Amino acid sequence: MDARDLLVQRALASPAPKVVPGASGYFTAPTSDLDPSLFGYGSDRLLPAVRQWILATVGAFWERRYDGWRSWATVWIAGSAISHQWSADRGNGDLDILIGVNSERFREKNPRYNGWTDTDIATWLTDEFKSHLDPLTAQQQIGATTYEVTWYVNPGSADIRNINPYAAYDVSHDRWTVRPIELPADWDPRRDFPVEWWEHARNEAGQAKDILRRFRKLHTALRREPNAARRVNIATQLQQVVAEGARLFEDIHSGRRNAFAPGGGGYKDWYNFRWQVAKRFGWTPAIHELAALHVLARQDAQNATYGGLLVDSHQVVRTASLAAQHLDGITI
Image: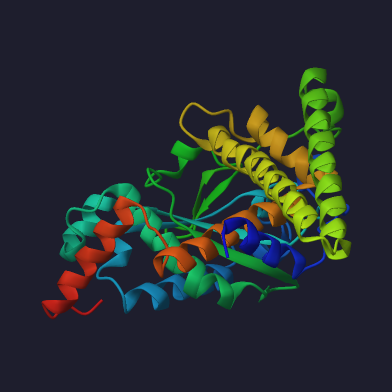
């Protein structure tokens, strides 16, 4: 089967995605306190038990993989969970653990990674978290709250201030690096952001809903159409719609990084506002399903054609480097 047929096969294996009510704490009035499951009532100091669990968890994960992690890593909690909007419905109740890595010290302590770029190291470490640690902490009970705890290493974030976080608590040193942004008690993004921003966001919501409407129509037509020639035509249209949805999701999802890159505006940046409004309108999960379908079908096609997934040059270098070191008797 070609890429189009593989896409259709995957698409028909599941119901067509729908827009559902979204959630984003961005639109919630702030409180004067912080999450008591993390900080205790009336305190801005991380609870000792929470701090111990975070450090013990990352330590247990890394100590059998890498040497001297405490000398090259700084562990932060960042994001809305430690902001004054912690009480809002944030959807999955996420708790983001962002780890800054001093790549030079990392390579000194772990010389088998000499020659790797800072981005290579950050990508490798984050991929390990996604594959092996995130699933273990996806439903983590901390105090009275269940969190989805996720772990990241961002390139160039040995100093987390470089990525303009909402807030950042230094778990390694038990202190604030970036205190939560102070918002007025009557915080209202509908009033505080430009009309043009809202208009653009609504237009994108309309575009997303149109993509999903066309996908559902084609999805239904494929299930009902017995004529082979007409099925080919419908399948081609479906492939185009999925690609369109994938581009829209990637644009808005990747674009948000601009808000938290050097020079970005952080919390009140257009790119973050755009993402938060999309979440609230509720269309991002459905479009994300199309983006995932696009990626999975492409991987299916690569497996069918080449017997495996195509990788970028950096991944080839990383894999070859580790394989060579393994042959030399280095345990990874």
